[in-house]
Image (cartoon, rainbow, N blue to C red; front, side, top):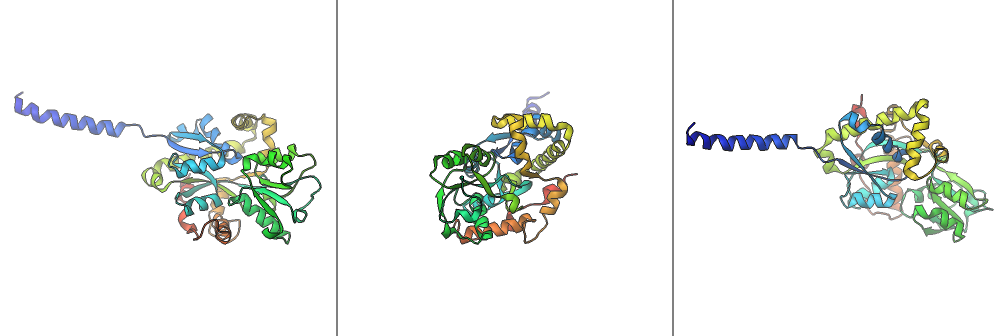
Length: 328
């Protein structure tokens, strides 16, 4: 073969090899930031049972405290974050754009207002100090409870408190009540003798939906992979719905948070895990708490009114129902 022909072939072969290398390069794992909530700890089931592999997608689960998970997402350290729908609104309003592509569950009693001994109902909170993470959904739950009992925020004194410190803050006697979700609400009940849950999300179902929120850039570049993640989630839902899996399921969930299966089991009763059929109903546009759109609109208005952020978020841009609709 003459030298001139070889000089033409070599660059062509090298170019083809380069293209082949690019085409076969393994995609980076999708990074999901998650935290201590039953509907999100359940992502460990997808990992342990091989549901991500089954659907053909690689996922790295990043464990954080709740607020830290949102900070990591806002800093670009995760492609997605597990957040309550209202906190998705806050992230969008403050520059960390995200789109909710999946609804895991809604809180059905796990979020609680826990009052010290001697306070039996929400009306008994008048004039009292309440520990709450101001500007987050626990704050909104408190406002809803006060409203339902004929009180306003001016009737109580709010003490800003990280949710994971709820048990020790109530036990210290520095406040008369706290607002927190499981396991922190349950820990507060145990830590303060005679304490009572005077209001829970079971009194306002749909006020807090728990979701998977994805950065728009990641969604644009890897839409097919995110579709596989959603499919893997519904494998989790099917697995959890089978009574035969309860023992193994509780071992997986409890191991993540350092509890025994027996200790963890009650948390699931306060979390309404949503089937695909449930989610399709929730993703219909509506004005009440039975719709994710309606719930987000209520939360959006609440945050603007309470100056958590100034301009309302465009709710429709923050929800993409297509992923659940495409799961077979």
